[in-house]
Image (cartoon, rainbow, N blue to C red):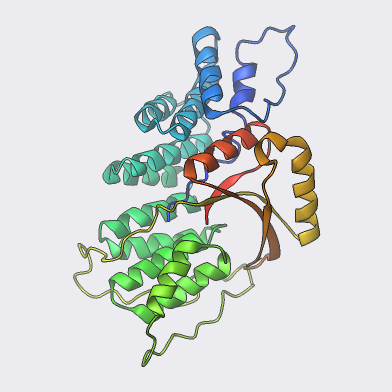
Length: 340
């Protein structure tokens, strides 16, 4: 599964940059944008700032980057690529922001099925930030789809070692590789590991259900969960055995990357009570977005960190989830997209 979360704070800071660019010394400091701001509104404000303001090279790059993200939320991916390219080409961004820009463009190119270009961008992001876990995971997805399974395995493992906060993604990818290599017992263990990381991860549950329909005469691999010691970062079981001539082998399993339902995740807390308190607070400041919806609190045990309680809200589809997250981020509220 592709990790679609963007560089931390980019969408949340879009309107702050827009408000700051071109402001005279007598203007008040930029304030948070209203939570009801939509991607279309953010796009319009970015356009206005670029057309009428006098941004510095770095602010112009940031505006292009944010406008590109707004374009993508609106499904305008070619326009998004153009803006990301403009932001990257200035060379004005700091190293971490430049890595994020390459990653953002890589995600969009991946969605446009431009696999080689997406690999190049993920690789460029990793040259700037070698432990960029999401870039490693997404590059592994492409390698897997192309049948470059040895490279995919390495990237998935490196993504885990780099501290991927969404372990369900690389675990699921390794399960897909195991299936492609006709190793169902290993695949089941990877899907179980994905579900330990995120019990709501429907892609892993679907594959696990399909593989366990007939388990007669099949001996499962009994592998303990990852060690809680944060220094033990390697995958807790051996990767699927890769036979000679693996390169070029096309996986026989569909990616299952498109699902109808989505959740947005608003954060994670150490107790269920804290998660409920956060929901009550959000009802007061984001009623236009979250009003009338029921929260879903998901407990999860994270290796080396302990138990957390994730606060999520169901959305009817990916587009609605993207719009809700964009509006929440514009008001400074953390939000990521997660599959049902």
